[in-house]
Length: 472
Image (cartoon, rainbow, N blue to C red):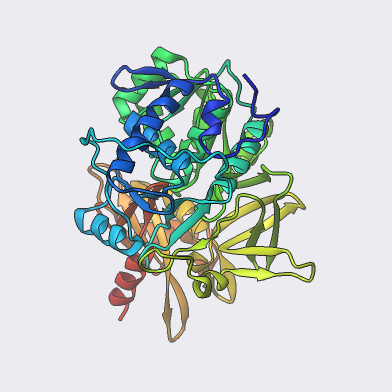
């Protein structure tokens, strides 16, 4: 069978047809990628009987199971556009996304069939719609064609060094780019792929039993696995996304358990695994988000502090309301063309270039604090707060006052602890410049969050509004 390196895939389904990967599911099903593709063709026949045809949008609202992958592959074969629906969405949110995208739910119980129309070349057809996190507004609908998915997958396999000897744990939600990119790269490499619905105790038992050699996840996911005494000692390469500012030591802790974690970067518009830190670097370097570009055809630059990216993994545009076409007016607001007619995507992220192919992600531009005439990363203050007694986690926002912008901290106490606000502020005075010291330290039971397909994100806008009310 031809390998990915020897033959150019003509659609997403070819990533499976060219692979010898075995996929193992939580219900005990173990199936080859080729047999899974046969099941996908049968699934396409069922979809055809329900009226789904090329260009139609299909809502995919499932966890990490075989039906989800069958539907993804059926859509790839038939030119159907998948709308990836976050499984954590409420019924109202699901209905809203389906209406906005013009999608329909498939009937998985139907046994009716129609002759499937399998497209030989679908690279330039629309394939999947991801959603952005939507922490401050309705999520934008991010459209990718099959070409961007396929070409990015091939380059991930080459850069990450996955091989048929690997056992890859795929515990990230398939409804997000982090999960889908990880799955497709593992399959395309010919690895043994454990498609799994993350649950701390069950996942920990799985890592012990299967001697997992590779997995990607969030810092919080690895943190919870370490607390559960998961056996991560066989992990030779695992990219992790930084979402929790209190877990700055996760790489060091994982190293002590025998696992090599390394920072990475991605977003729905350029796909996950866009860049990766060199796994041979020391723990301090691997703890930094960002990394070296995975694709040799990709580019990164920083303009006025903002990270801008280009490359074959770039999205096709934001979908307009109703889903009929790309919203070119909205999309153009996030793109810029340079003197050489190269299109760059404006990420909205604050970053610094380490060299011409490696960058360091700092924060979202909207999250950066301007204090005392200086730009301050909130993580810097949060890290000092987490060193204070009795504080488990912290988030920092800025509030504009007549005397200037001042930092306000929200903290999660250690279990059973009571926070002494003045003592914490005094602690920070000994560690931070005066303009960085929080004027208030507010304890919370939990931060307000949005549980997105690529990880949990804290609703900082809500915290800013609360801080402003407290200081009025």
